[in-house]
Amino acid sequence: MTNGFFQRLRNAFRSTGPDPSRQLFIDDYVVGGLEVLPASCRDWCAQQIAEIARFSAQHEAPGDAGWTDVYVRPASPASIADLSIPFAPAVEALGRRLARIEEVITGSLTAPQLIHRARAFGPSPLTAVVLYGGEGLRLVGSIELTLRSDEAEALAVLEAMAALPSPEPLLVVNWQRGCLARIGDRSEVEQFASS
Image (spheres, rainbow, N blue to C red):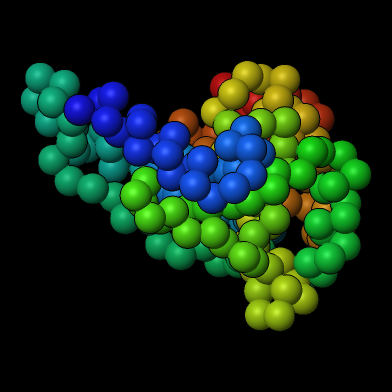
């Protein structure tokens, strides 16, 4: 069964055209609990990380069998869309610092779908940043990250994000590991990349 899964994945990538090493498949699993927010959300994120830890401790199942309840995080007080980051200059800024990944796809392995409003950059499809254009590709609607490779590649992507023409610094949060870093703060970014 596993071999069939990987064969379908290879076939799906082959059928779309470009070199599979320059395609990024992205979904919630690939992102893995990472979120990019305005730095003004820092205190809220720290409170949420503490609340998640408290809730987790209160709902541990006996025998290390998981948890008896799930914490549902509320919506953040601000989003990337609220920053009105211009899309074309953001794409240009990342393109000067990171290799462009030709295609961003999502969906299923048997029916991958090209995301036309996405632009991805990074050293590999395992470690990349994706900008999603809003209506008319005028402004950045959201930003996603995948940091599944080594620390050096993660650091390269996080440092390149400091060049985005944002009116305020950005914040990257790893909800699963309970850590965060302000983009542009070298020591925070290094610690985040190594965690």
